[in-house]
Length: 223
Image (cartoon, rainbow, N blue to C red; front, top):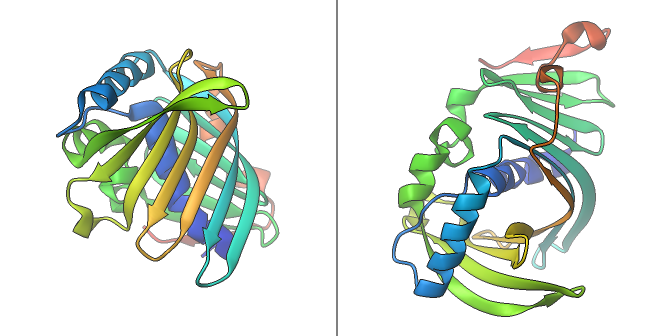
C-alpha cells in the first residue's frame, strides 16, 4: 500500500474531482438555476477529449486537528488519467490502476473494476445521470472573477462517504473553479484549480506505468 497516509486520504476525492471536471452529467430534482448551469457544463464538458489541470488541495478535519495543503497535477485523456501529488503518482491506463510512491520505490496495482462506480470513468455518465440532485447557491466574485455556485447532493446518501459537493464555476468560461467536498467523517476537502487546459495534447505514454523506468521497484499486484 502507499506509504503516504495523506495520499490514501486524498486519492479517492481527487479521482472524483477528475470525474466532476470531465464527465459531469445530468442530475435529478434540480431547481431551474442550477439546472441551467448543469446544462451549460454538460455542453462544454462534452467538447473535452482531455484536460491538464494544476490544483491545490486543502484537507481539514476540526475534530482530529487535521490541516493539510498539497499541490498537484491531474491529466485526463478519454478514460485514462495521471494524478501527481507530491512523491506519489496514480495512473489509470484503462485496464489497471497504478499507485506509485517515489520515496519507497513501490507501486501497487489494482483492478479498475474494483473501483467505486463513482470513480470509474466507464460508468460516470450513468452514475451522474441518476446519482445527484443540484441546488443553486448563489453568484459572486472570486479574485475578481464572476462565479456561480451550486450544491450537489447524492440521491442515495447512505451509499456515499460524502454528503455534499459544492461546485464553484467560472460564469464566463463555464469551467469549474473550485470544488469543496464534505464527508460524513468530518473531513472537508477543498480543491482550487490554478490552471485548466481543456483538450491539451498529451502522449499516450503518460498514461502507462513502465516498470523498466523504475529500477528495483517493488510491485504489489492486488489484482
